[in-house]
Image: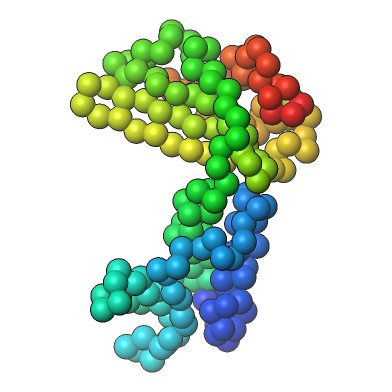
Length: 190
């Protein structure tokens, strides 16, 4: 065994470790929710050294194979990135609290229109924040799931951790706005 493969050469062990990490953020996750097109292996590369390998099935006849130059930590991170969006889709939004109007300076900041700044509760549990902004020619949105461990903290500690997760800037609310958002504390279960 070498440093790249501290748990041996069975790729399923690394997949299980990645899934354990995913469940810290997505406790509702089940393996049947993973994206079916991805397959993983540990194989020998052209130099005869073991390497992580990904397979992506575009169609029955079109399967893309990539030999990765990474260690186990990077592989676990890649696995999580491959499946996070799919896991998130499996937990639909149940309730929404839009706090967009609390953004300092209003909903138009530096030429961008803040369309949404929503805290969301989900059917299978958990909370996320959905952010969306745009200008006349471009736009973007982002959903950030809030780690369940944050909700075991006090309200003040939660706000500190939230600011680390979603740092205040032109589009994100700061601690003062969040503290003064009517009903937010209760919406988030504090």
